[in-house]
Image (cartoon, rainbow, N blue to C red; front, side, top):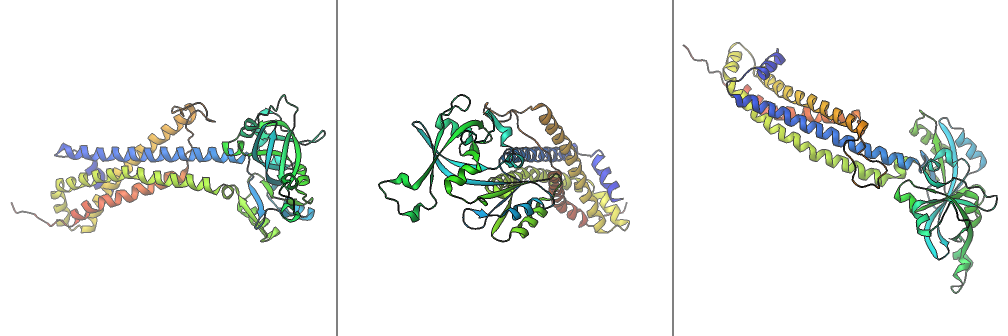
Length: 411
């Protein structure tokens, strides 16, 4: 009965046209706010998905790193045990170290990443090549794949030049060996790499990394066969990331940390999530403005329906019933506005996904149009927000209607 009264009050023609107009303005404001929230949150989801896709080309699903120090040592039996954990697809040993690279008169500082033959199954750098090929073989010398920024800084021609790049890495025992300050080159290990390809993923990677064979770095650094900077893992489809992570941690103990892809890039993900929540808060003010319209509309409706309220109370209706009627009236306004807003947002997002109507400025981006991904949790969050705002906006007019005194006059 409560909803029947509320729906009738919403649809019925009022004695003052302004009441109808304000009610539909409230619906429109909620619809616009809802559509804006869903659309903008979906764009943030799209950019987050894009970043995750880019980082997944370089970072593994799980990464085992030392709790202290720069390297860990894993025995062949430990590596086999990790590979045998249910859900683990591939494992890859890697070594990372900063180095000075020189090509003729050009030089730069980069991070050398030595990888084994399983690395292409753990990451997807080989799918991001823009020139040359992904070949780290060492039949005639160790080879390497350069980031686009490193290639540009060194002036390397990976497709036509056969000139190797000189690599200088500080020796791990340099501080203990007592090398003369007059001969600083004695504190460096030197090697050469033959460029074979160039990858382009994202500027942070492209201007920083060079990928080569793990044996090259182990030789220069004097590492043992089982020593590594990290053990990288890829998982089988459908495998639980947290469950595998727990099993690896239990197997290897507290001497290592097992990081998920998000934890490997915690700063960028935290920044993106913070931006998303700040945007949500600011756009929610559109709904707050709509709430003021609802308060005005319902307050005028209470004045309009004073006789109805008096009759209901005279018939024995409690104040709580009258209050629920006008609360339901506010929820109807909020509900209709949210449905229109959701429909509008879904339409906009689908058009953007299929046709890319809103383009990104400039021509240096990996994509041409704003990416969009709709998530169910965003719809749930906006629905709860609208419900809370609708109840709060309706509470005062509904309470005022409930407190109204009976004023029947004898005729």
